[in-house]
Image 1 (cartoon, rainbow, N blue to C red):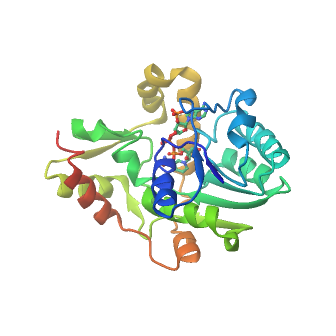
Image 2 (image 1 turned 180 degrees about the horizontal axis):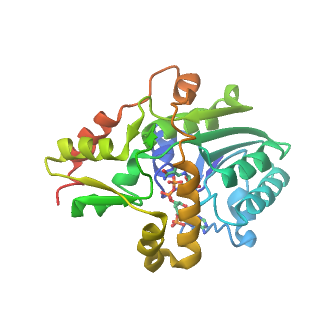
Length: 268
Ligand SMILES: NC(=O)c1ccc[n+]([C@@H]2O[C@H](COP(=O)([O-])OP(=O)(O)OC[C@H]3O[C@@H](n4cnc5c(N)ncnc54)[C@H](OP(=O)(O)O)[C@@H]3O)[C@@H](O)[C@H]2O)c1
């Protein structure tokens, strides 16, 4: 049985679609599942782990203080409960995420790390939606170029890792194949949506001010630090994870934009 945490999220939902299509036995959990699962409440862990042999680990924010310790503790509890293999969703170029990766790799269980770049779905389901609806989205990312990845590709890699032991011991650098500046992503979204969308390259201070009402001062500071790290140029290189894990090319951002526009998500 496969345990899927973060089951309602951008990758978890897509992984569940695939496991369902393949007729796999899985348990999808989050804070409102039955039984519920909460990272902050270890007393919720044994019930969701019962009978699981493989687990997909999605922490809501690996950059958060204490995330790596929680993941190390979860891996230990999972091992005691009979889990044999862990698949961790990680973030590319994030020093905090690397500590969590280490916790999983040193857990004594079989592991796969899926280290992903910036998700295209941030524009449709995440951080920046419905911001493009206002015609502008803002990030402290300057002119940096990012190999934006489609969560459909992440879900394909994760599902392969959950269901096939050949992916054990692999760290997959999962990105799209093209480097795009955020202004170029805005152009692509504009073309697909048929309405102008602009990228505003704002300062870290302006970003902190923008986020604070939504996530509080500590959360805002965490995201400012995270952006300073991942948008400093270190990720300006496409990874080989999709090709290595699946033997095919990553999905392109243009196709993502076309499909997203067709769903009406940008029909503001
Ligand atoms: N977005 C990006 O560009 C990007 C890039 C690289 C890596 N990442 C990593 O991706 C991860 C997020 O994955 P995602 O985008 O698939 O998920 P997501 O869409 O952010 O959704 C978060 C999931 O976690 C669950 N959740 C939230 N708080 C929880 C808690 N306290 N206890 C238990 N479950 C909780 C939510 O379900 P409920 O609300 O139902 O509990 C939801 O299913 C993060 O670790 C992030 O660092 C993101």
